[in-house]
Structure formats: C-alpha cells, structure tokens
Length: 130
Image 1 (cartoon, rainbow, N blue to C red):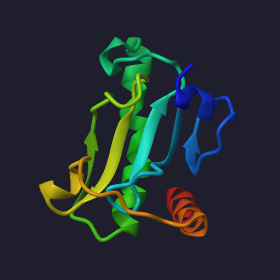
Image 2 (tube, one colour):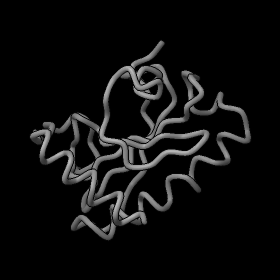
Image 3 (cartoon, rainbow, N blue to C red):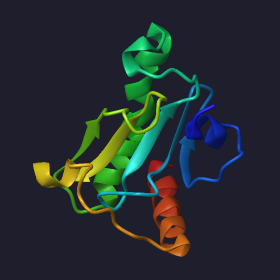
Image 4 (tube, rainbow, N blue to C red):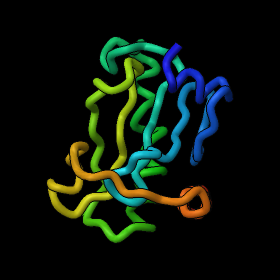
C-alpha cells in the first residue's frame, strides 16, 4: 500500500482540497510553490498511462477547477501540470502555480509552512473552488 493509498484510506492525514469517487487532491507537504497540489487517482496504479481509460479521461476535468482556483489565488502566470511519479509508485500529477520554468523544478528547495499556514492555504483553495 502506497503512502497515497494510506492518505485515501484516511490512515494518514492530508490537507485535502477536493475529492470525488475516483480522485483526491491535497496540498503537497513538500511544495516548491505556494499552492502546490497533488491530484491522485484513488485506484493504486504505479504509472499514469496504465490507468483505465475512464479514470485517465476523468483526471483533467477533475483537476481543472482546482487549477483555476490556484491561478486565481496565487500570483502566477499559469498553473502547470507535471507528471514525474518516481517518488511514490502511485499515479499522480502535480499542479504548480508558475511564473517561470524554474518554478516547476521539483528539485528546488521546498517551502516550509506551519500547519496553520497549510490549513489557511487549504481553506483558500476550497473556497475558490466553490
């Protein structure tokens, strides 16, 4: 069971911003930008393109309102989507508020937020989606 499956099962807490039957989205706890969100299919599959067509087809429509909320909330030129998937063997994408290509480098130093700051960011995103 991956760390993401444990989050989905409620065994590990997260700063969830959206969820439906097939996907969950939560703040990356090691963000490279403020508002960095992970979108994760609930089905535990290692590689994104090994997901069933119906799940894969639902990923972007699920992510779109989250990305729009991030773009509205955080000073950015756009929200980029990145698929790396090497750090956790569970398909997922990163939504990252971006102004330059440097902003989406996952090797950048991570931004440290307190639990209260994460909660504030979480609530801003949830409100902006609604």
